[in-house]
Length: 102
Image 1 (cartoon, rainbow, N blue to C red):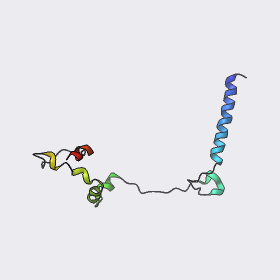
Image 2: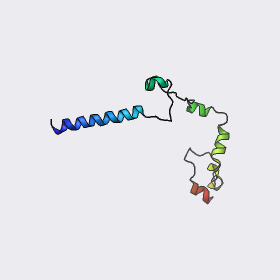
Image 3: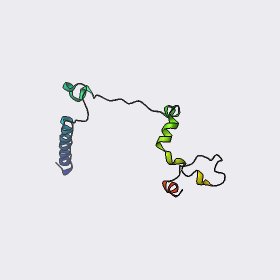
Image 4: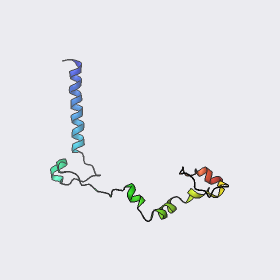
């Protein structure tokens, strides 16, 4: 037998041992649906609601949430100079450094 076949045999043994350790280990961060069946019984999953952009856009409380979450986004509006009351194209919010200078 050449060294490559011997290497493959050792690799196969190592993979089998690793697989056995993973399959028989006890993990406390998941629960089995049918513990007596092992992994074949499946897991107990927690589901969460699916949030889409439509849900966010149609949320009637979005303005309140925005005001609470980002109160400093308008800090530089008064320091913009003449024409600041004109509508501006959508852009990034001011940086924290710019707000600190205002």
